[in-house]
Length: 586
Ligand SMILES: Nc1ncnc2c1ncn2[C@@H]1O[C@H](COP(=O)(O)OP(=O)(O)OP(=O)(O)O)[C@@H](O)[C@H]1O
Image 1: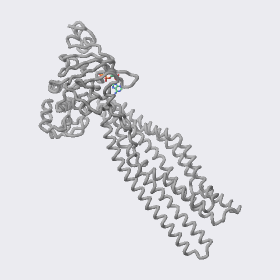
Image 2 (image 1 turned 180 degrees about the horizontal axis):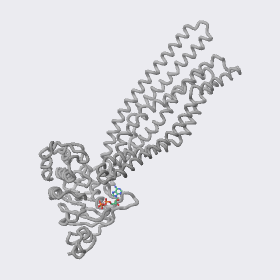
Image 3 (image 1 turned 90 degrees about the horizontal axis):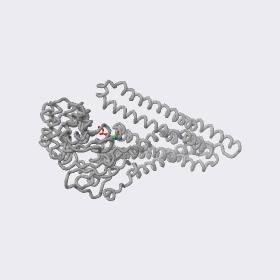
């Protein structure tokens, strides 16, 4: 396909931490030095004790070591604070950058992708996951550097005293690491179960809240509640399994690294070495003092492991959204010179196992009305959604004028094709701004003209705040029919040459129905219209009616032609209006 040849290659997604890596490494460096400096007070105490025990006039040496100890403690604290401030600042900066990156990226993924994602899942990525990365960004690097810095400095110092005792003192560290890493082997699986369960709760909550009116109206409270409480139960089970396993791992490492365990090992081995004449009694002091302080940074690291795993899982979710392929675009977009739509041998499937549309050939001449009819699930909605590229065809092509829709700039395509679909979506803003979404540059008078054409002006004026009435995403004060007319007003303002209309199945009262039909007549005047029709009488005057069955075109013609051919359309007409077949064919 032409569009493929010229498609711009997508640059690889930069890592989440790309922009802040340098600053994070610097923070970790500060933490490494801070942790190493933390050894100095222990060394000072050990050396002062040794001096007091072995030197006759210890005054100056004691003062010197005192100064080293104080300087070490102050240096450690200063660098610790600096490192923490830096990484927390970086974390705030990264959260801002990632939210902006996600927002930019989400505007480039195919619109159809959003229908696959629950809004709870997206909210979790944009809000919770980015916040859950806090430990990963602001603490993990510091903790790792700190767990490395102190043992390194300790090795350097203790080896100068006695290398054999150094090995004994440090022996518990690898043992603790081994214990915890074995216990942690199954934790990633548990963590993933926890994350999945959390997503189920989010989705169930959003669905429950969003659908509360339907749930109440149809007395589905019990069923919806069961789904919600099932998600909560699943989460509690996953949490219990995760806590039991992580608790065991934490307990084992804490026991191994507790001061009591370190003292038992150091004093036991030290006493044996003193008895054997390998170690001077006074040289045992540094090992006792340093040995007790050594596990502290490692314990911090262990305690942060859970948060680290949570942060990594969250970062994985954010990366997955950022890696979602953007809609392919061309370097040199083209602009059609006319506004007919041509489907040429269009194949499409939402996945490779289930083809929804088979070789659909269809021409909608400029300014004409084409109605799509067919049984539920035959692919009518899918076919219309391929025009503004909610999804791309898997075979064949859709052209507007002479141009493949994949060769139009996506923004231009969406401006040229107005969509009035069943699921009316409003944003939480005033009625005026909701209509203005059709053309953000429109003035108030143009907004009002569109509302007038959509038979909505009088209704809006009757509201206490008129055009400044704030509506919610569910419509708030507006009835179903009024919401539909609002989206029609929006489409009228958009003034697109092509209109895609998914006729509402929900019935509205006769007054509203008449107003909607009048509004639609205004919207579709002189435009190329592709309408998905459920109530056949509404499209009886369409220029052509196309009958879809299981993704195949099984009939086309005018209402009269199709009735006379006594095919699927005639049967549908007869069934819908309960006519005997012979009468339908007449
Ligand atoms: N987002 C989606 N992901 C996967 N499959 C889908 C998706 N949307 C629709 N389908 C499937 O594609 C097929 C065609 O659905 P489509 O909604 O296009 O039919 P339709 O003729 O418009 O039906 P209706 O009259 O009930 O609205 C169905 O089998 C449906 O289950």
